[in-house]
Structures are given as structure tokens and as C-alpha cells.
Image (cartoon, rainbow, N blue to C red):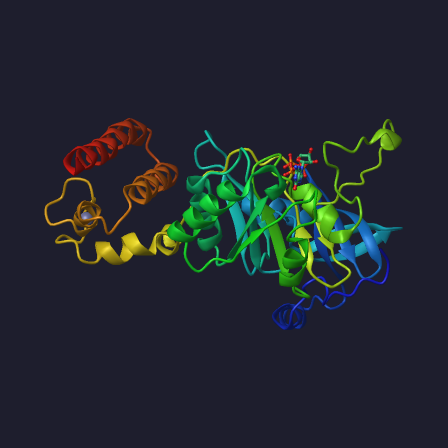
Amino acid sequence: MKNINLEDLGFEEKLEKYKIANQLDSFLTGRVIQQHRQRYIVLTEQGEMESELLGNLRYTVQNSLDFPAVGDWVALMEYDNNKGLIRAVYPRASLLVRQAVGRKSEKQIIASNVNFGLIVQSLNRDFSINRLERYLTICNSSAIKPIIILSKVDLVDKEEKSRVISLVKKRIKNTPLLLVSNCTGEGLSDVKAILEKGKTYCLLGSSGVGKSTLINSITGQSLMKTDKISDGIDRGKHVTTHRELIVLKTGGVLIDNPGMREVGITDNGMGLENTFEKIMSLSKHCKFKDCNHINTKGCAVLKAIDSGELDEHVYENYMKLEREREHYTSTTFEKRRKDKAFGKMVKNVVNQKRKNMY
Ligand SMILES: Nc1nc2c(ncn2[C@@H]2O[C@H](COP(=O)(O)OP(=O)(O)OP(=O)(O)O)[C@@H](O)[C@H]2O)c(=O)[nH]1
Ligand SMILES: [Zn+2]
């Protein structure tokens, strides 16, 4: 992978200015394409470099989120053949973060400097509209534009396909929706067509939905290990063929995330606001500013459920994600007990509404 062009990798004007302003132009510039503990594979114009943090940087880092991550731009120097020392991390244009489920306040970086989130769900067993909204929230909380890709279309019939499409379109507005099959090749050209030069796309989705296979289909190469392909050749050798960040010949960058099981919401609030626009605009008409949309008088959200203007499932999922966000952003353990009571209340509201309907 020699002669890589930094612009194809996504290096922008803004970063160039930062480089000059911070006297980093005597260093090499590269992008982290893989991370394992405190070792990083960095792609530079001279090729890949196995890198570590420079000592003083390691000791001045305060927060785990400050360590370099896949997608980061770094300034580094070569100290040996293809071995590098990272001197600085460039400011991030965006950061995809997830909450390590079950562990309080522990955030993990999925990737940095991502322009688009490719949210992949398979049409057969994995499809869940609530989970789609969860990923949308994660993208929206970090100014990453979401694109929905429904995979394995070859496994469902026409009726199921159109059922899911109309469900997605009803619940989720203003988000591109693509359908693909890695087996028949259907829709692959649509995916290729949206990939722009110099932009970074992060694949998001549960294990097994076909993210790695999709990358292989797009690149026409077996860059990603999928569970069908045996890696017998590499066995026993310490060779890593798997890269988390891939530069396309056409100039776009893809980032894969192996083994994403659960993603928790770690949100500043904006993610939910953008994802559930309808609820946000309704809540402006609630009588009280701090309306909890559960049992407050004059709640416009509840009124909209009654009138049929708001889908109760949307309401339920919103309340669930909002509660989760509160849970992870709060510090007291007391909150956990509160959470339970809160969940019950939401269920009651919905049950009550359902009863009233019949
Ligand atoms: N029928 C069908 N199977 C597919 C399709 N795409 C992928 N698969 C199969 O689904 C399985 C999982 O695919 P992967 O690409 O490994 O899934 P992944 O999302 O990368 O999974 P992780 O790496 O665990 O996150 C493999 O057996 C693939 O062959 C598709 O479009 N249609
Ligand atoms: Zn309200």
C-alpha cells in the first residue's frame, strides 16, 4: 500500500492549517488504521507504520478518550524501519462513541473523523426498527450523517421487503435507505455510488449482518475476514490481514467494527433530539417546560398519542433511550432504582392508552 495520497485518506485543509500552526510539519502525518491496546498501525505516505505513543504523550493523556483511535490523524516520526512514535493527535472532526454496556461511565471510541455512519441491518433476523433508532441517535449525537443499509435482501420475499421499507420510511425521515445482497449483488452499485472521495464511512451494526462481506463486495477483495472464509494460511503466523480502516481505490475510506454486540447511548442530548424530531417539536407545546411526558398535565406528547398523531411505539422507544441516556450520564447508583420505576410508568402509560383505544 505504498504511495498513498493523504487527501484520498481524508486529510483536509483544516488539518493542514493545524499542522502548520502547531509546528507539526517536521513530522510525518498519518491516519490510525488499527489499534491494539497501545499499539497503533498508522498509514502514512510512506506506507504502514507500527507505532507507539511517545513517552511524554502517554503520561499526559488524562482520559481514555484522549488516546489515539482508529480514524485519528496523528503526527509521528520514524525511529526504525517502519516503526513510528506518535507525537500528537490532531483535533477530531467527529467521534463515534459507545457506552460499554453494564459498565458505568465507561465510554469506548468506535472511530474518529467519520463523515457517514453506514447502519447495516440484515432483513432476515436482525431487523429491528428500535435498534435503527438507537444507531441513528449515536450518529446524530456526533454530527455523523446516517445512511441505512438493509442487507441480505436475497433471504426475504417481496412482501417482507416492502413491509420493512414502508416501516422504515414511516418512522425514519430524511435518511437514505439502501437495500443490498452480497450474494446476488443486488444494490451493490447503489452503495458504491454513495461513497465519495476523501470521506470516511463507518459501518455500524450487529455481528453477522454482513458488514465485512459488504466491504469485500465493495472492494472486490477479501480484505475482511468473514466467517465463511477460512484463514488457514495465516494460522500460527503472527500476521494480521484484518485492517479496520480501508482506503478504497476510488478514494473513500471505510471503517469496520468487528464484534459490536450491544451499543449503549452516550449522548449529549442532541442525538435524541435529532432522531426523534417529532417528539421534540411536540414537547414544545407541553404546558410545563420540564414535562416528563408521563403524567404531567397538559402534555402535548401524550395528547398526540391519543389523537393518533404520534405512534406509541416511537414514544416507547424514545422514552427507553432517554432513560438509558440519563442512566449513563448520571453518577449516583440511586438512579438505577429510579430507572426501574420509570420504566414501569412508561409501560403503564402505553397500556392505558391502548386500553382507551378499544
Ligand atoms: N444470504 C446472505 N448472506 C450473507 C450476505 N452478506 C453476508 N452474508 C453471510 O452472513 C454471515 C456474516 O457475515 P459477515 O460479513 O461476517 O458479518 P459481519 O457483520 O461482518 O459480522 P462481524 O464481523 O461479527 O461484526 C456470513 O456467513 C456471510 O456469508 C447476504 O447478502 N446474503
Ligand atoms: Zn409533555
